[in-house]
Image 1 (cartoon, rainbow, N blue to C red):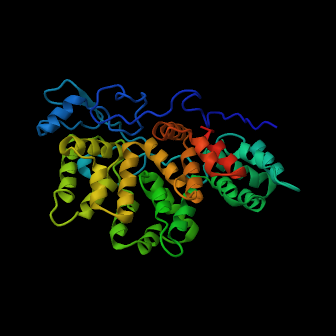
Image 2: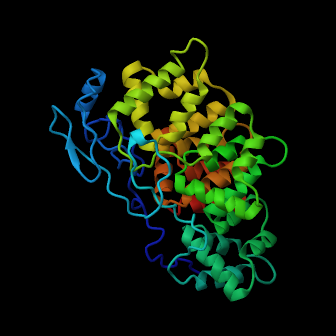
Length: 432
C-alpha cells in the first residue's frame, strides 16, 4: 500500500533531491559569493545582513562615531559610503516586544514556530492517515512499516491534525495506542512525532531535571538558542502540564554558576532576529567579552559573558564572533573553552556554535550522539525528530554532515541502530 499522501503545501523538498543542501554560513561583512572551497548556499534566516567589507575597515580603525543608525522604516547611508542599510520592517504580528535592550533597537518579534501554538492543526483533512494508523495497530500484530510510512513525513501541524482526527474518528488516544503496540527506541521515535515539538520539548525538559542529577545535554537541546516566542510557549505548556514553573524547577536543579545562565535564558529576552546589527554595539560587545575573559587578571566575569551570549540574536552573535576574530585573531569559541568548564562551557558553546552555523552544529550534535562506545539513543532520537520538524533544516544538517564527516548521515545511522528503530530514523532523515 502506498502512503504518499498529498502534502498540500506541507513537507516540501528543500532543496530538490540531488542538489547539494549544505552551504556554509557567510561571514559578517563578506562580499557576495561563497568562500573558496565551499559550496554556495543561502544565508540563514534572521541573519545580520551584508554591511559590506567597507564596514570592516571602519570598525578596525575605530571610526564608529559617524555611523548612522537606521530609523524604523527608512534606509540610511553610512557616512563616507554609498552602501545603504535597510532598517527592519515595522511590527506585523501584534505581539508585545520581548524586552530587547534598547540600545539594539527593537525589531518585530517572531511568531512561535509551527507546532508551538496549542490546538493549531494543519488546514487539511487527515482522516485517511488516522484511519490507516488505526488499521496498522488494530487486531493481531502491528504493521510497523505502515506506521513509519505514515508518521515519518509529517510536519508539526500535520502531526497535530492526525492525532486530533485519530481521537475524533476512533475515540482512542494515538499516543496510548503507539505505546502499547510498539517498544524501545522505535516506540520513542514514533511517540515523539505524534506528540509534536511543543509537547516533546516539555516532556524532555521535565525528564532533564527530575530524578538524581541533571541531564545536561537534554536540557541544553530543549532550551538553548531558542526564539523568545518558542521559549514562552514551552514555559506556558510546562506549567499547564506539571502545574509548576519551569524556571523554578530548573533553578532548583542547577548549581550557582549555571543557574544564573539559565535564568537569563528562561527570561526569554533575546534580541529578535529582526533587530538591526549596529556596528558600535558589536564593537562594544567584543571589547566587553575580551575584558571579561582574556583581559581579566582575576578570572572570567561570568555574568557579563552570559549576558551577551544569551541575550543577543543569532545574527548578532555571528557578527560578534567574526568581529572578535578580526580584532583579536582568535576564535571566540576557543576563548570560551579556555575560560569556562563543565555545563557552563557546554551551554555557552551550544548557543554560540548554533548561531555561527546551525547546520554544522546540528551535524556535530548528531555525530556526538553516535560516536564512542555505545550510541546515546535517547539523544539521537530527540535530535533527529527535533531537526526534522523543519524540512529545510534537516536538508541542511544532512548536507553539513556529509561535508564535515565525509559520510552519508543515513548510512551512519544504519551502522548505529537496528530493526524498526533504524528504519524509522533513516526514514525521518530522508523525509526532507
